Length: 303
Image 1 (cartoon, rainbow, N blue to C red):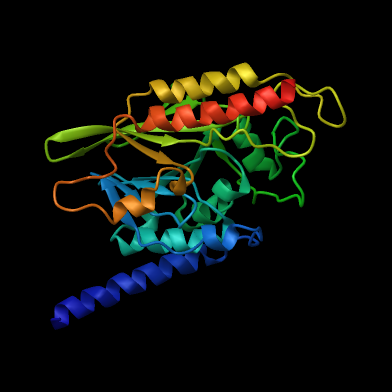
Image 2 (image 1 turned 30 degrees about the vertical axis):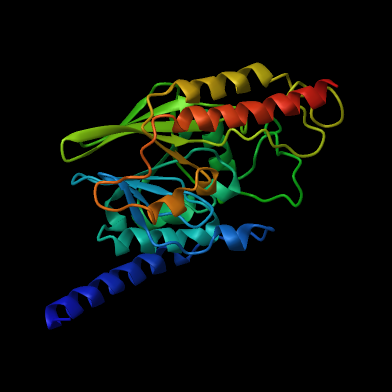
């Protein structure tokens, strides 16, 4: 290795360490059964064109880069923030160039690191109306299927959140990401789409929010008038969200949990012109699996 190469490596490592340090004032770590495995360090990798995976082993965070600034999607756990920041800097990008942080849904395993990452970068945080309420209050509302989860885990508060609705396009220079409201797993679930280009080919990328019909306590997706919940029937809107994701123009899917499509494993399969992430059926397959699980859950609720 030449002296110049050694110097460049030291500079890159120093920058990554500095970024990690800025995000190191991460908020109180969350302790859960899966947290340690989820938060295992993963070397960042390119998905396509200007789209990069910068998350951890079990929780996605995605960087969409441009010369005019970068957009980050999600922040994983609070303790993931320094790992995400270090991943971004190790690719040669600067945290200070992250101008927007977009959220999929405001649970602590996807939004937990957002506050620290926003502090480190100065980025504006963007979420759905329901998600913004959670990010600003730090607490999930009673309409969240996991509201009764124990122990209660709060999301670190974000002072200012820009709210988006269905079809809104978030722009930063030449970047344009579209918000699709996909409620069900949470009331404010948001799936994001954009186009990334490489050489002469452009593809449609879908950052798919969770469509998992998971809940806590006595919550029922078919409605519940018992106990503390008293929630309406949201089964139809959940089914509509699944259908929406299935119908999106989709060449590459990036789920909020990478393991749902083997995303990290696919990175190791990439070679030459072969890109294992490209699969025009990926969104349909993702939605169909979610639909089967939801149908099973609804059937059990209805007896």
